[in-house]
Amino acid sequence: MSETSASSTTKKSTTKKTTRSTKQDRVAIVSGLRTPFAKQATHFRGINAIELGKMVVNELIQKTELDPKVIERVVFGQVVILPEAPNIAREIVLGTPMDVHTDAYSVSRACATSFQSVASLAESIMAGDVSVGIAGGADSSSVVPIGVSKKLSLALVDLQKARTFGQKLSILKTLRPKDLMPVPPAIKEYSTGLTMGQNAEQMARDRGITRQEQDELAHRSHTLAAQAWEEGKLDDEVMTAYVEPYTKEPLSRDNVVRFNSTLEGYAKLRPAFDRKYGTLTAANSTPLSDGAAAVVLMKESQAKALGYEPLGYIRSYAFSAIEAAHDMLMGPSYATPKALKKAKLKLSDLDLIDMHEAFAAQTISNIQAFGSTQFAKEKLGQRTKIGDIDMDKFNVLGGSLAYGHPFAATGARMITQTLHELKRRGGGLGLTTACAAGGLGAAMILEVE
Ligand SMILES: CC(=O)SCCNC(=O)CCNC(=O)[C@H](O)C(C)(C)COP(=O)(O)OP(=O)(O)OC[C@H]1O[C@@H](n2cnc3c(N)ncnc32)[C@H](O)[C@@H]1OP(=O)(O)O
Image (cartoon, rainbow, N blue to C red; front, side, top):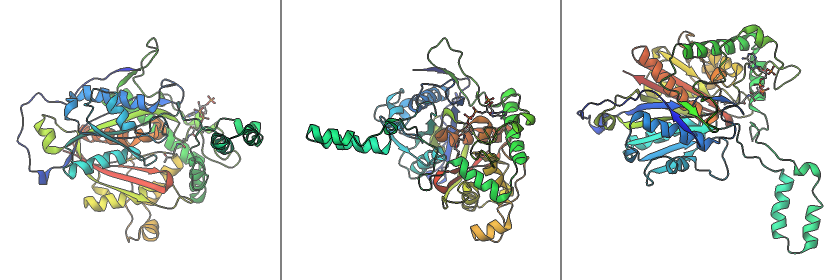
């Protein structure tokens, strides 16, 4: 397995503080941490999502000096589930210094999975069920469950039921060599059979979003992410990951981010999903990657009683669902107005907007929809547009196009990153929002004092 290291902690050495009444208690995000994100089959080759999850949670407990005994619940998720251990949350409890009696369950909401794990834990805290917990997600695109063809799967079940040699032989005779080939998981929509890239191609085509516009957004994302790393802005929220063999250099930065991004480099690439007419490439699509991210949540009064100064608080969150056959990756444009309404805020009240960049085309489509009165009227049933996005507030440290997207880890990455950035700016309100497979969307508004 792996050892890790990270820098500062958020624990204050102060004595207990006066707590607020339960009624006024908010859900505090005390700390957040992630592994560096690594491109598929690079630094985390051979390390599965559960090990990545254990790695980050272990380090988070150490970083926060949190007594493992006070952690009452772990809510975690992985999108590509390992059949041998489907409850990643429980494996994390059993594989870290947490008390064996710590409750743990796993959730799945495709690419918005750690928005869900954070929301589920927050709900338990608000309901008074638990007061301290860890939420997050992990995914590996390097260790994936390899399946078998439908024909072989059927034959294997039938073989178990067959009584005679003759019956077994006739089942085996139905198989052809191609049926014996391993089947890797596809990033496909089950209901439509379309890949995520094909969905984004449709969105680009329908809106006339050009290759140039997509490349420019991707270049912006890499440039801002590289700058964030160079300026040390991510140092406190990304751990250093040591993996076997320990002779290998540890990874302390995302190896997906391009520190020498040039727009000319993007123009050379061939379309990835529609070879002939497509505009999506490896550069303007989020790369397949491996990583994990987690946050510590507490009831505000509990955080103060334990001597923590929270990073920030959850102001509101909302999820949305639309059809999966068309414009499937528009989740932010449906979930955001719901979260704003719940928080009694307007888009212009926000100091930062962090939108998951699955594809540049999907991001631009959502930016357009936010600023469209027609979209608001026709799709949201409201008279006014969500609001024009001020690009000076938008993905100011880059986004998933640059960092990569280990599916279930992305939400917790965005939440932690936004809270730190709000804190650097002296506080304020930030939106984090993502699209997800199945036409789902997530939005969470965070506040920092
Ligand atoms: C809700 C949601 O989030 S949906 C999204 C879910 N996620 C996805 O669907 C994943 C989408 N991404 C993918 O499937 C893959 O990353 C792909 C198909 C786009 C690309 O895969 P690959 O071809 O394996 O990418 P790879 O990393 O090898 O890059 C291909 C080439 O592009 C180059 N490249 C990639 N990014 C850049 C860049 N920013 N600038 C210049 N060149 C680049 C690489 O260097 C490489 O060049 P080479 O062939 O000369 O070595």
